[in-house]
Amino acid sequence: MGTLDTIIIVISILLIALVLLQSGKAESASQAITGGLDLFSDRKERGAELFISRLTMTLGALFIILTFISSYFM
Image 1: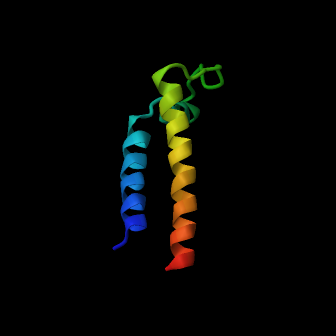
Image 2: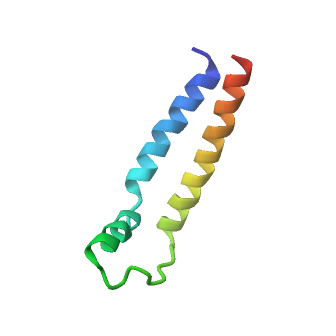
């Protein structure tokens, strides 16, 4: 197992942890089923939520790029 594979594994573990830390997205989906009133209210991410969301997107893009590179060279 090479260095690139190790980096991909570390990024995937971080992605799993970050997705589990995020809140609010699943609540909106459940309100659509149960008929919640504030389903379409504007909720803006601030502070730590914004940071975690942007870090998740960045790590996700990095994961995809590194996976393509790994599959090309292996």
